Amino acid sequence: TKERIQTLESIGFEWEYRPGPNKGPNRSMKWNERFNELKYYKENYGHTNVSTQDKNNKELGLWVSRQRTEYKNIQTKKKSSMTDERIE
Image 1 (cartoon, rainbow, N blue to C red):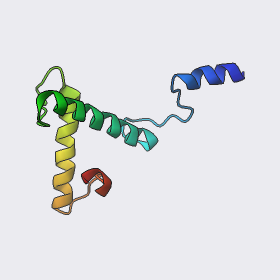
Image 2: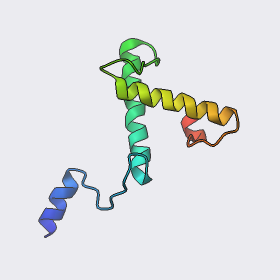
Image 3: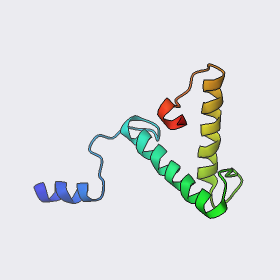
Image 4: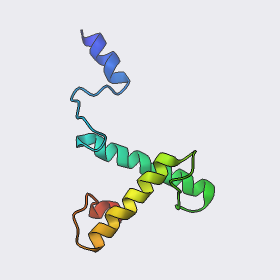
């Protein structure tokens, strides 16, 4: 029913499922979420050097590490999923 559709959509239900964390529209959304986490981290700690060993921020640390790897790939002319928009 329309009510059920609205109820599902009210919690962000995705009608088109795309498997994997880095596929389709979810990719930009997840990237933006992590970016916002990093901004918050910097506000609290004064830097963006998030350790992958930090138990409280392990996922963010892994994300930061991947961003640095992707950036290095661009610099060395290797394949990368990093976009110019994200570098700026």
